[in-house]
Length: 251
Image 1 (spheres, one colour):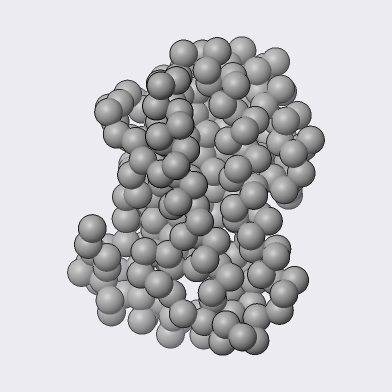
Image 2 (spheres, helix red, strand yellow; image 1 turned 90 degrees about the vertical axis):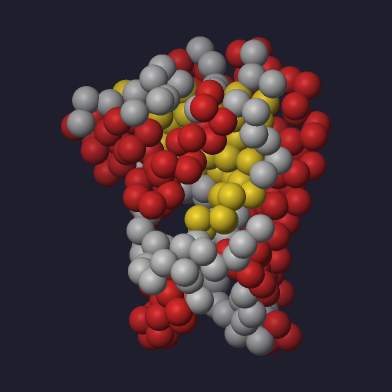
């Protein structure tokens, strides 16, 4: 499905991003695994399975770091075909009533979850234009489509991702660059455990109760949807937000 595609995955050191990088490599993509934390484990798994990839340390908030990411990708593989904007601030955030959220936490969520995607798109679009097109997949969240309370910084940042996706899709359609987003429900990852803390089990139970499919989302459940959006099989799909949430929000 992704044979020969050059795909950048941000936030690939662990969790969902790591799953994307490994599975897309198995589908034949050349993977650029990036994170502010080392992606050595992700790259080792890709190489160990016979895949092709490189790992880069990237801070998505820093435009110079993101530009270097794009330049290294082109220098290594000659092009950029896909970008999965998965990097996000989640586990490090602290929830609570909206008027109790610290300003620094609000600003950090917007910087990573919104500006970070904007930066990565700015860096990747030039090489995509030169390649004749490409696909950008932004990872939003059920928090935005459902309206998750007591985490308004996170919820608002992910709603911004959906708006960014729609506007950018209209701008880039003429360049044969598609932009879509995926909105998953709570996933079993380290970040989810960190965010909910002692309330982790109860929170996942509440999420399951609101789903039509009564089980907790696993990172592997997202791979097919994102791979489809990166591939030519979705060649006439852009500006969409696809909910992968077990049937919680119907759109």
